[in-house]
Image (cartoon, rainbow, N blue to C red; front, side, top):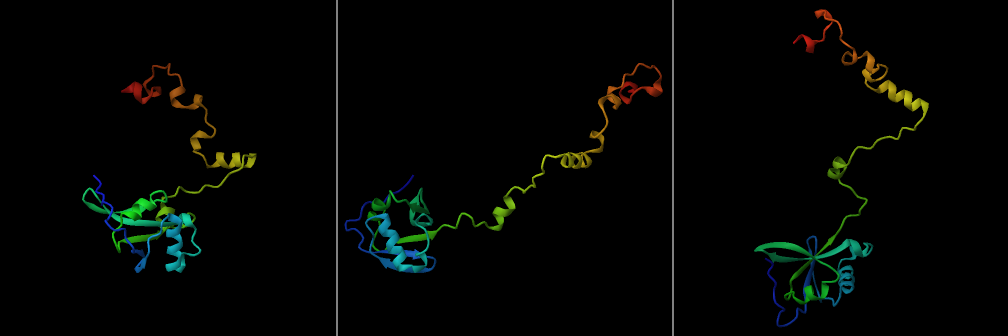
Length: 161
């Protein structure tokens, strides 16, 4: 169950932007774009970060547990209107998609080399395959031999037991 705070009697005239361990009071922006502009003013390190990598979060109580909730662009105005005076909006920058940490590298599937389809490649594959699968045919395998003899020495293990 989600608990929502009702709209304050007086809209917040000031909220707090937090980035890492830095806190800055700002006037709430009317829209998401204004929120991004204000974030870049108070945190210049955000100037070269694309909009889609900058996210805003508030702490909300969900089923009795405090949790971080991201504010989407479409929910900006109603979410900001419900904030209390001085309430914190966390600014989080997503990592670049091409950046991978060691856990992701370890979980990635192995990379395989492409082997061209050529006579040399076929010979290489045949030389690396299981020795029994290279030249033997089914007729030379014990299961394919016909057992017509009644001599115990020529019977298979299955026929003897």
